Length: 113
Length: 119
Image (cartoon, rainbow over all chains, first blue to last red; front, side, top):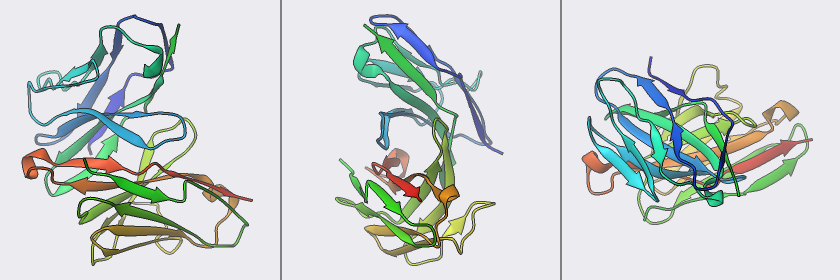
């Protein structure tokens, strides 16, 4: 079945450091890929998405590129801020007609000043 | 943008009672809604998929008689935890699918979650 494997945390970085959170997936067909962010006690917010190979999703300084050849969708940010501290989830939606999201385990990110 | 309102945000109930959680799409019609459960420091586990006007589809291992889902309109889905027990304590999150500008741009909007504590 479909699955998402996500870099395990927790991850602790200093402010302005470079961030990478790895995500790889297994799916049949051509899934859509997502990164969601969850702040403490809240639901999930869409951070970015990509719907086909080589697409790059970007938002708030975060980027991720849909790499079909490596089945990856790694999240990157050049300079993190304290406000980026949250839990990040990689997810996929397998195909139209089967739209449920499959999530990775989540990565807790803490940025220290 | 698409907004989903989930209520209540937290609830404490006695063991054996039932609790209803509501999820409303405020500015779009949601033909499909999803209900997730999240344990502390863990990922989201899909419980069921509800489609307006039809029975919900439950994931394997989820008791349909315990977690009643009703999706009676295009803007409202409810999850009722019946005869709640302490092991049902968890964070429940709903999500609605919206088409955006079309099927090529479909997406998901999440509610803010409900923290259920059964004592």
